[in-house]
Each structure stands twice: as structure tokens, then as C-alpha cells.
Image 1 (cartoon, rainbow, N blue to C red):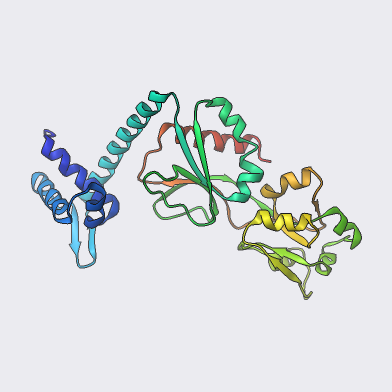
Image 2 (cartoon, rainbow, N blue to C red):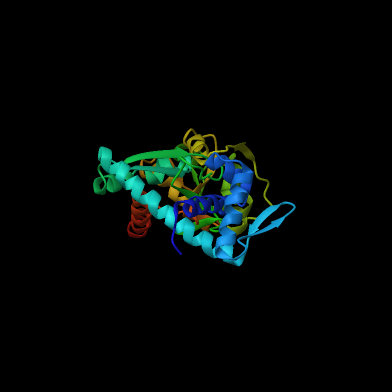
Length: 297
């Protein structure tokens, strides 16, 4: 079938409607009316002789044929976006990569590694957004994200980056002053928590310490702040292995007695499943997965 100009505009309207699963949102994106998008889709359905959407009271959903065409159209659009992005990058000699991740992971794990990536891609401009909530991959937003979670999110491709583990830490002075010699001794300390799903009760259970009253005196929304509170001797913190490395290395925190407990959630690199990564983002994903495997600490 020849792709005449009017057919291409109909395909563009269909691709947007399929991605949003909503004619009104597609119309807003394309600066059209919802009726114009609907007209384009109906014209496409008439040309193909198949229904692409099931229309119902709450909106629309793709048919099997619609899904097949949507996957192909999305791939074609991603290819074009990638080429256009490369041409724009070549125009000023640089590419641009935008990463979303957690503040704690950026400070302790990602930043020490970035010079190695930069050495391989010296002309690349990198933006790092740190946030607690799940990333919204809007137009002009993050290309990819590094997230701590279960490893499966609707609409996202997720690559396992690394596992993590929990163990208690405190300032050297606090550990010495309170003569912490075994796991049960930690119950005598003020405890510092963050908002992670696993906390002190989980760790003490794994350590075989039962029935002790716990003084969870401080709670911080950010893991970095919780560790800094421990550095200032406010109490003992339950640290994630990947986050606490620099604090142990410089001696501002020491590991306390007790087991290292595997986390139920781990780290993943994620990006929209329907979007083909642009070259800079693809290079970063390949590099960070390999780097994490080669130098796990």
C-alpha cells in the first residue's frame, strides 16, 4: 500500500492515540481537535479494512490489529526521533542525556562512576534529576531512570542493575561509648530510620533479637540524611550497603555487629517500553549495567 501524504498524517494521529489510549490527549499533543483525530483513525480503518480501536463509554482500547500496527508505528517513530536527535547532536557536536535517580544513590554510588562514562563520551551533556517519586517520562523529561523497587512497573522496561543488603552502622564514638559488642546491644541505642520498606524490626528479627523495646527516635525521608544523622552520633542507622560505602571508607561510620540482610527490593534501570532509546541513553544503559557487574562496590 502506497504511503500517500494523507495516509501519513492518519498514521501519526493513530500512533499518538494508541500511545495515550485517548483521542483527546492525542489531539492535545498534535494540536488538533478530538474529532479530527477520530476522523483520521476512521479513515485509516477504512483504508485497512480492520478496526484498530474498540470504542466504549470510558474511552478506547486497541484491538489485536491495532496493537500490531501501534507497535510498528511506535518503532518507526522512535527510529525517526533517534535519527533527528543524532542530527541535532551533530549540529553542535554534543548529545544530551537526562537521568532520573535517587539522591542517596547519586551521591554515594553514581557520581564516583560518572567520570568513567564521561571519558568514553566526552562531548555528552548529562542532566541528573534526583527525586523520590516514580519518574514521569514526559516529552522533554528523563530518558531513563535508576530506581529501587520490585523490578516490574507497568509500561516500563526494567534491567536489573544490582542487589543490596542492610546492616547497622553508627559513628565510631557512639559504638565505643556504648560498648556495642553484639546485635542485642544495639537495642540500647537511639535508632535512626528512613522510609524504606524494610526497617529495624525486620533486621532484629533476622539477627535473632526478640522482645526488646526499640527506641526509633529519628525518621528521615532521605537515606542520605539518615546516614548523616548517624555520623553526628544521633543514633544507629540501618544502612543499605550500596549507599553507605563512602561513609565506611572515610571512617565517619563503622559497621555494628550483626548479620547482613538481603533487601527485598533492588536497583533497576528503567525506561518506557514503547520508546526506543536514543543513542546516548542506550550507551549509558549498556555501560552502567556492565560497570555495576565489573565493579559491584
